[in-house]
Image (tube, helix red, strand yellow):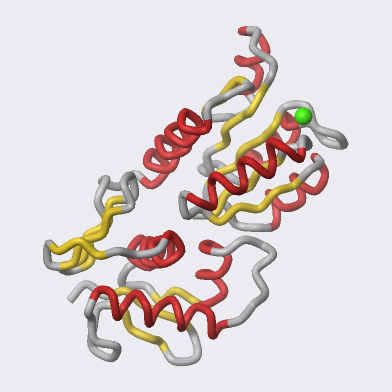
Length: 222
Ligand code: CA
């Protein structure tokens, strides 16, 4: 899951990036409206967190322009504005939710999870054969036994299972699981995949996570 944060206060932006990365999300930060709009329109995100007052292009304008092109990706506003009129204005521009500054990170995280669950339209658990993932608690089990994955391993496995029975290209995986500053190195994905296979005790060749030579990986229901 990849999130774009558009926030011009470096302290808040850094706090959000660190907190969300600790929760296994890949996070890109834009500190002005123009950069934020460009990223929103050119990169793939699962959710946008937009500040309202931004230099260059306002959060509301980003929201409007983004909604014209992308109907489904959830948008949450971070705003110091709290009058009813302005909140309605934000929702009319296409935002799904808003949270008032100052906010508790826990509350923001809950709202993010609600939006991502709603947009996925999926059940809470992700299942691949004997493997079960619970994105709300980061718990993984294989044949009923708990498996201890790192946050990045979890994010990668989650992505593969969400796209199961389809080939996931290395580019798509990197774009969804790592942030924009990740230096492309396909060897890194192999290392993570091998770690996941080892921890889940699944066969490299015939197991549910298979390599598609020269392209990427596929998670297969078996
Ligand atoms: Ca601001």
